[in-house]
Length: 81
Image (tube, rainbow, N blue to C red):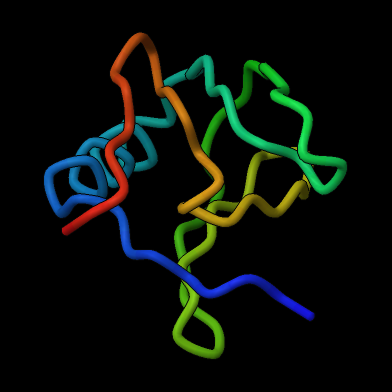
């Protein structure tokens, strides 16, 4: 069963949009499917919603739920909008 989606803060979404627009390489920490914290460097290819869940797609095709993001370029993600 998939966990309930908790929207991220609107200001954090704006930060993601800005970095996607600028095609800036980001350092992102997120909780992966095994519930381990993972850190990658990538560019954001797309931000999208599916079934009322927001996602980030990296330049190499990886899909990350936005409520799994813990940190972006040193910015700690809080879980509420």
